[in-house]
Length: 132
Image (cartoon, rainbow, N blue to C red):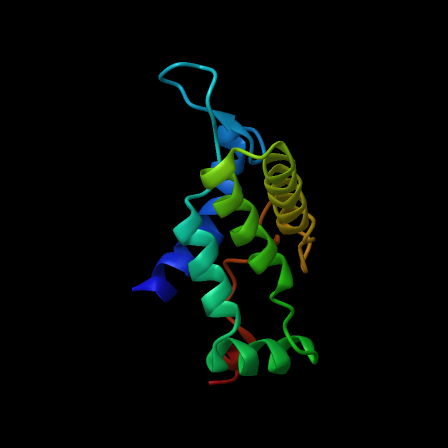
């Protein structure tokens, strides 16, 4: 359950960032209470996923280096600090972390150039079909 939630929250962050203004939002009920970008349980699930053996092996296979989970732990600590003491430093830390995460996710470039129109000979049979 927590792995599915963590994966969903990672995919969801791009859309959510557009809605809430890159991770900092106000409670719509009274307009003055600041809420963390995600619930603290989401940060805990991401941190737990990051430390799992499956993620460790996958990250090492894909990137060739060990995963670093310190940022998720810092975010979890800041979120809990905000919930308990309403610390301004925790609020600033969470906002900066979410902004950086969203900007990193949007920084990926496309591998292939997108076409504006199909090739001129798209309707012709393929080479192997011509030989038969």
